[in-house]
Length: 194
Image (cartoon, rainbow, N blue to C red; front, side, top):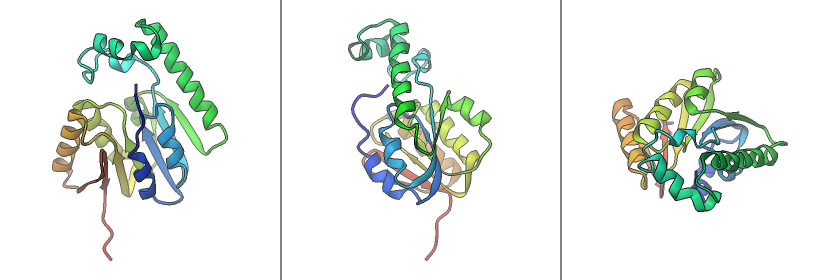
């Protein structure tokens, strides 16, 4: 669940290759998605829109902490009310992009990566902010990217799990990290020499 806006995506969309196909892992209300569509010819949106990932997640310390943190936003601490809240957000996203070149995948990133069999130009990673979850999304992104694809992401400078995962991914792969704006980062699979 997200409070506030991802202001850094305003800089990220400018780096997206024109007429490209991309995947956004972690969509929420689709504000970043709308920006990405300024350049993308097709966009795959991946999000569970569910409180289930937080049941065993560590991002907020515990499931109880997560429920407490967002109870004012939802108007309840009951997980069923949380699910109703997420269902409403999901329906809003469906409506928002009904006339756009978008495919919505309401599932976990794990389910997505296990079932997706296309190659894309870029992936934007902004879902699970735990070390394990982010590292998984980064590693799996390599499997669906074209040879000179790009990984973009958020929360590099403000989420410890993301920071650690990105750094470890860079160390393992030997790729170069570009923390180009605030929390935003870019990892190109190949660099173009002039």
